[in-house]
Length: 557
Image 1 (tube, rainbow, N blue to C red):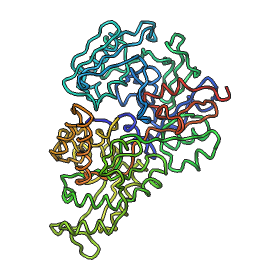
Image 2 (image 1 turned 135 degrees about the vertical axis):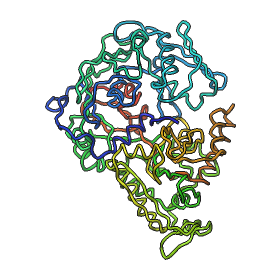
Image 3 (image 1 turned 180 degrees about the horizontal axis):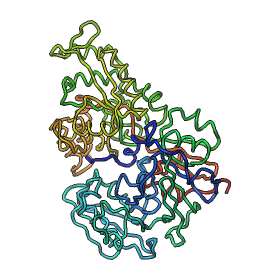
């Protein structure tokens, strides 16, 4: 649906790299500096950053490192981990949807000031949504805003169609000051040297490796116990892991292949990790326009032999992306309320004999131990993956071994990230591990995989979903029905239809859930979310990072 992942998913692939930019391993922001109970040290393995504080731009340092979350604030905090209690008023004190999610009215909090002392008003909120409507380069979620107005302390948004599937993106929108952003000639490329936000912190210093924020004296809420935050951009996963293990970094989101050996065992009392799954997925995406992978029985057979347990324990190190084994591909337990009764207890398990029978019952044959397609050609699968994405590489090697059991010769072609991105974008591939968007329902999963409205022929670039070039009018119709359903019963019926189509057609082999976790230390700070108190996702680049920072207290206090 969109050209990028949501943040939780966009960074996950990048962070899976074994190494990023090759450069000096020095760290001017954290190395050599003693920890302080008033300072929080956050790290990400993104390599040296160029100063860009634009909160709308996915590639900006502010977005990649996560420090925009402490400067700018959302209207609503949305907790996608705890679906039963997932919204918390922030800059908006209340909000009300009407006309089947075609209209929403926000009531904006009084007595909030921007960091330059000017008041935050409903006009600022309306202006922020106008920026998104009028500048496609800023509207990375592609929400189709239409009517926008402000009156007193209320902001009203009107849409042509139901925004049920987009409500999270609308509610969690951060706000920028009109008196600053109206001066920018090209907001989409503006680097915002002096970010003015309503959050509790302001930018103190920027270097390519470390950004320092300091607390404000006039913040509208009780001032957080954390007085200074240092965001350090480490050169690669190994450097970030070392920083966590030595205590230089206290909070991060990074793939550690052997976390117990190299991280948690260094300080079992204080070094923790938590990676909760959400309604987004990772899996093997087929190019359904390349023969023989246009054959649904072949795709279903592959789904029957992929060992998800091995992928979770080996590729994902037993924690990073939780296993998904429901036949619908919907992650559990988060997605349990959406799984239809027909598929509630149906799990994808390894069944080599069943897969072979499915194939031979539907036109495939064997020559010795080699699988031949209905035209008599040997079945092969060439997969591609960025060479540094270590978990994806391992996952594809596992799948390669699994496919031998049904006579398919598979290869894993490790290429650079730019070449991979171009191949996925233009359809120049047979198979690859990839992710989907995530959201408050499984709609985002199925839309990323099966939406005909996003279809582009092989060779045409600019793909914003449906990377496997899957075409099925029934799937597109069910997606539209779900998005525009007049009531819950209609939505349930559409979701059931989507599950039936997915299980029958299997345009992707879903193996893992997206996660919104992180590593953290309780040596200096306590109050982190965890499995027992899942008040927020733990990833330091998400909007909820501010909620976490606000709750942290010095250890022992």
